[in-house]
Image (cartoon, rainbow, N blue to C red; front, side, top):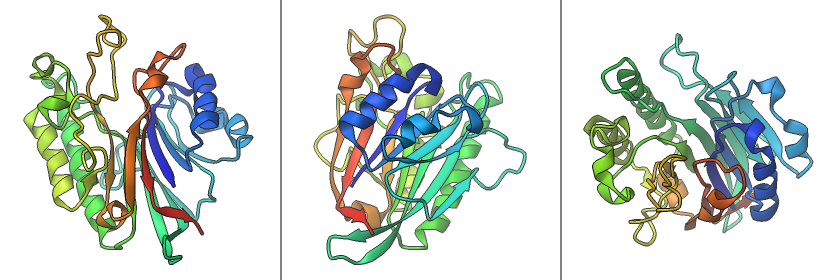
Length: 268
C-alpha cells in the first residue's frame, strides 16, 4: 500500500498535475495540503473519476487539507482538537479497514497535516506554530493508545537536521529551523513515531521543497520539510520510502514534491 503526502500549493492551479500524478503513481492514499479551496469548490468529480474517494477540510484562499483514497472511509475527523477558536483548516484524519501480510484485520489511521509556517518569528505566528505542534503531540499521544497503524503525513514546515537543507545557513533564525520547532518534532518522535524517510537509507541531500525564487530548483537549493511520521504499528510494516523529485520539473509545479511510504498492508 502506497501512502503519499504532497503540498500542492493550490488545487485550482495544480489540478492537471494532480490528475497526471495520480494516474502515473496510483497511490492508495494521497494526503494533500494547501489546497486553498473551500470544500464545495474542490474538483471532486475529476479525482473521483480516477477511482478515489475524496474528503476535504477546506478554507478559502489559503490552507486546506484533503485525503484521497482508493478505499472507502470508515471515519473522518476534521480539525485538530485543543483550541475551539482556531479556524484554520490544517488537519483531517481518515480511518480505513486494512489487513496485514498475515491477513489480520486492522484499522489504519491516516492524517493529512499542514503545520503553521511560523514566520516572522517575532510575531504571533511563531507562538501559534509551537502551540499547534503541542496540540498535535497531545492528540497523537492519545491515538497511540489505540495501538493501530497511524500515519501523520504532511507539510510540517520543520527542517529536522542541518543535513535536511542544501544551505542551512540561509535558514538560521527562520521558524522552520528554530530550536523550538525542531524540539517539538523531536518530542513527537519521542512518543514512538518514526520518520519514514530517515528510517531507510541516508536521507541527507534529499529534499522535498524548492522555493520559486533565486533559481532554487535549478541549483538544487532545497530543504526537507514534508514528512511521513509512522506509529510503531505502522513502522513495523514499512517497506520503503520515495521522493518523487521529477514532479518539481513539470509545467506549473508546486514548490513541494510528493513523498511516498510503502507499507505491507492491503485493503480489507
